[in-house]
Image (cartoon, rainbow, N blue to C red; front, side):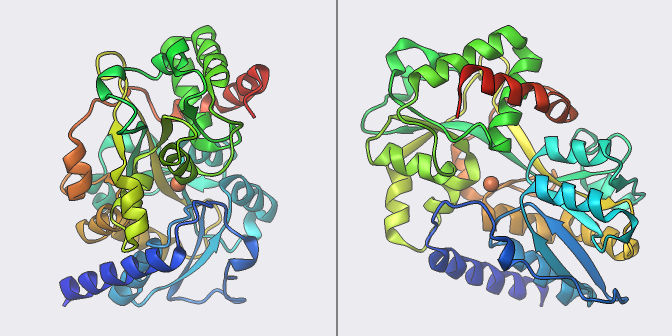
Length: 358
Ligand code: FE
């Protein structure tokens, strides 16, 4: 019963991809967000989410199907949602904060917007290095920030590290989005931690010097620009490649076929990995339902949806990655605590400004 529902879910998701026409636009329109019910009642949970993936709707539906608990979804940029939770204080209707970046989870915790959760299920399903030490948030998926290259112009043997992208030979060839984006902020924060501030600054400077164009668009737009020949290489998250590769739109599949995925820094300090994770808000009115929702997300059933639907790496080690991700092979990830991405965020933003990364 459950299985057939999931299969149907995946089919629906595929259709959603097609309809979404994959604009690569990742910002959510605030007008599209649904409001929580006026009066919180039992049998619902209010989710503030910075995730911008259509496939998440299938997760909510599956959860409601299984538990009868309705999920009211409020989408927005993570920073806006954190701001909103701060402003609303104990009057908030938000029960859960779901973010697509470890740095923002750390911030939410620092601002005292989350609370600790006790759950054997979560502790069993999510490894210790993928959760907050006080159990205020748990990662549900992982994503790698990789180098995507034009197969017809770049031999992967020419590729090695993030640092190498600053080499003269890539002048005018590198595509990467704006420094306002959290994925880039966390990437730079990781370099500051691993290589020191000076080296991180040199890297950012070098990338600015080698950019194919002023940063614009989301990760998917960088891939499209690689295919269009605006540049040869893009720095982007893995699941965006997966989304195109598994699209029902042949044009999108064709885009993905023209690029290769390269995991940088395999002989040095590893590829940058970020997580998407979730925590119960400090003033949650539906805490029990919120914890049930988190437990559901960590289950094999939901983790498979994350993996198959959005090509994210499951946080639950019992669940396999999608076939596509498996085909890219295993890789060595950076060995840093995820909190670092939040702790160093402000310095990373400052550094981006100093080097003129738009
Ligand atoms: Fe994303």
